[in-house]
Image 1 (spheres, rainbow, N blue to C red):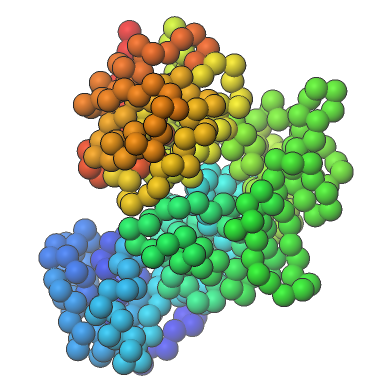
Image 2 (image 1 turned 90 degrees about the vertical axis):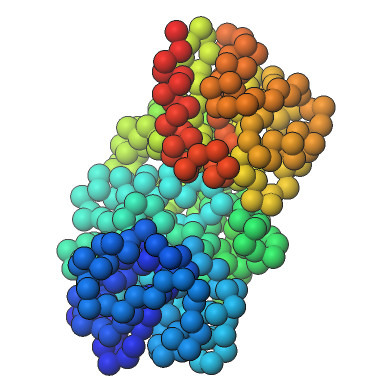
Length: 448
């Protein structure tokens, strides 16, 4: 049974993937609604007109008077709440909401909610696989893969949700069984006034949470909460009470919980210190919802990582190639540089650059100086990265991705790794980060 009043009028603002999931959900429950989009030809317009020809849809500049006919606007994550038409509607008493709030109101099973600047998709996928290995009927999605509302089913025993800061802006009371912000670093500074505003958006994930997981090596992930809320931590340090971390015995490093070793780090298929942190975060979240350790550790032994996320492509002439195209911000690139760099004998040749989204690249300098042999720069904001890195390592400019690979190969020595971790969005040169990663992998696989 729907938990939405059907006698009220709603407007779906934004007709992308999540907008279309809202259309399907509202239509299936007989709710009166319309659709608006700032674009003249939004991605799902043809599908809407084919499947729901009776729905009123307005494309182009948002009409405030039209928006004010609604009791509630379900706003796409892609549209900033600061948009003047939305602010005007809100000022006149229209509620601004989103698909995640609607999902939370209708979900009958516990929710594991995961956000963070980096590694959300890896940890979300891992927790989903752990739950499946434990025999749970689990649904995984949100910002990753399937939109939240399309996952709703009475058969599901656990929801594992990746949530972006954009989705959380319109999420007022998630009520997750366990929630986490894995890490926080500058991202989307073209949308937020600064890091504090971005931090506030991320921390909306903790609203109504019954348990929380935080990264004890990142103070910005620790929620401000009342006493008595069950709280678990993860990090690469030695764990204490209610904590997951690393222990070393006789030269062997172990994933550990409290005072108990769980498994040797060498049994992980995913490489790098950042992936050890991801494994520990997944264990903390799974443990919080009662998943048994044997199932979780079994999943960790077989999980090979996600495409475009520090994904090993091949080795050639003693040099490994990694596709980390998903690193669209400085924090993600840092995680890959430090994670891989500290886990290998050679050096990295870093391929970086693209659309920097207003980021400050100076945070890369120390890690690049420590772990990289050279940096190959391409794309619109390559000059900004070059200025931020200064004389940390030799810099080479490339005119294309193929040129960047060729230049990197010329710099690499046996034992080194060539890492595509751009610290930038891809839109200045590619359709999206997936296309950038696929083209990189294809070009590397074609090397003789």
